[in-house]
Length: 255
Image 1 (cartoon, rainbow, N blue to C red):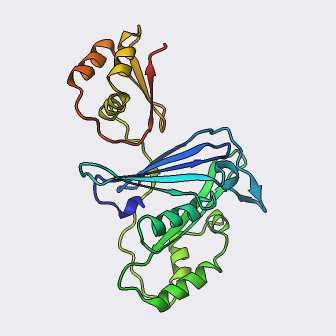
Image 2 (spheres, rainbow, N blue to C red; image 1 turned 90 degrees about the vertical axis):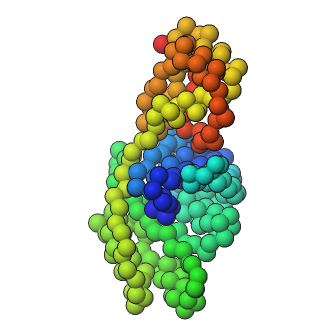
Image 3 (cartoon, one colour; image 1 turned 60 degrees about the vertical axis):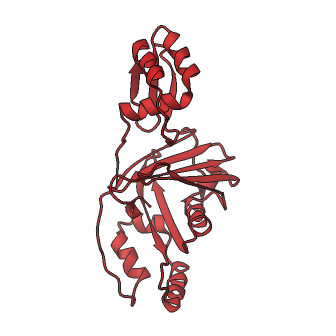
């Protein structure tokens, strides 16, 4: 979804479920930079026939909120109910229901014995006008016969090979390739915005504490400290806060 954005735009996905994982928060940039975190990282993902069952950790009831920062006055935000607790199903449900774009999403992840991600990948296919019904029907049929995606990527399969399977006999063109990698985009400016959202009273309360205030990035865990004087200057300036995804933990400095 980040690849569909223009330069300097970003998208944030927040999955909130009734399972032990709590929530999944992911932010992606148009450049391929991605950062993510979960509510309870100590949860073990259950397996079924050797495959990771995300719904067993996230839960099958809850909601998905998508926030797009398109560099307009206010971000676009849409929320839908979870369909199954599986990421691919719920993303497809959001795109079809909220954005009204016929979409199919397939995702697969393979975990190493120590719990780290050994391989992961997937596809997003969207039908845009003018729509070719025969091609769509053929793609839907092929998606139903695809190998398990986690097995495909675990065995060294590539995204290009997956496209060749899906689009065999259907002309397509590779427009661009991007490297996807973890990269946190937290900054002091974003931390200030996170503080401003707390309101004047909360900032004043932090300013009265001995150590001032701290903002912790939930993605990379970097800690940004603000002195009493800096907090007081924020209160005095107090511009209208920007709407940002809750990717920071704010509180007094207890060190």
